[in-house]
Length: 420
Ligand SMILES: Cc1ncc(COP(=O)(O)O)c(C=O)c1O
Image (cartoon, rainbow, N blue to C red; front, top):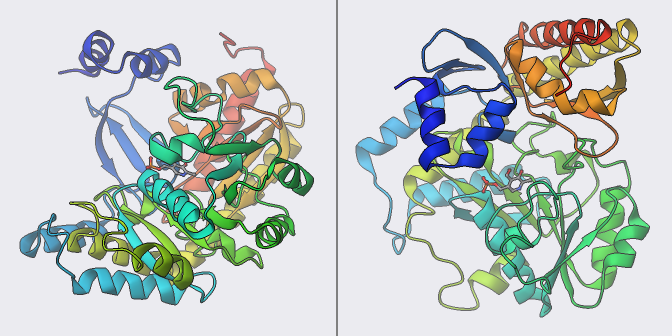
């Protein structure tokens, strides 16, 4: 089967929207080999630098050898599905997360199969703890596509509230990330929790100093829980193990996902305070159960990933990546002042401003033509192009991204970029 056959097949009998979208973006690419920061097409004729990483699933690189070995070794001994049997592996995960959590109070975890499941559960936990039934989330945020995770997803492009006629009484949305008044106004007495990422979902802009602290203060005062979704920002992505640690804030629940399974095994976790955990998991017989979640395989993978992510060598590499990208973007902003504008780089979360909204519409396709897969471009102002490179990437990655951007800027200046 060729790449074109796969796309034709998708359009005929698969997820037509996806295939047509990629085709319209001139991004008809079926992934064959994948290794470290690179992916190759099915025909093995083209190599692309992966700087989207599906929002951090492959933060440690595709098929990270250490995690791969962990999975292979685990499969020699274990299987999944014995959810009624306690395991030492699940306990070891519990302990490594408690030891490395942003605050000592966050010390109990529940393993699930996806961040969507963890968010769904976190919202239920907040209902149980507060006796209220609504969660407040960011209007342009994304937290998942089913259950309560879908109900707290406000994004126009990705949200499903209207599409599936989801109940609207369980969620509310604050309109602006970073504005405490907007949160205060959107929160009513039914609100059990505020759920948010430590950065703006759409623009990648990190929470300004004081914002998360302010949200935490509102939560305490109004009796709601604070759920911080570190699905994308955790595991070293921000330069620290948890992005929450850049702030003086004590969440009640933290969500881990995506990179926790390194793209090799489905695993996510909800990490909570003992108070929240006990109120939900230890005050009834079966506070949460799932046939496949919490298996020793998932626990071993997640433990290995947390261990790699917090190693000094990993964090030093992320600091170097941050500095490479900061320098490269500053240079691009000077050379192409008419095309690029300064934005922000925090660890491996990188955004470069675009002067023209029209550029935001085409930049992903243009970089892909130059064999760099970026994360995305923002759909709301400020216009930025966003990158989520592998955290294990070597010193060639910053310059490779910069070269593709410079080539795009040259073409933009010449008027040689197709705006269609
Ligand atoms: C911030 C955030 N939370 C939750 C999720 C849901 O993660 P998953 O699709 O792995 O269940 C995503 C997925 O993109 C996400 O970006």
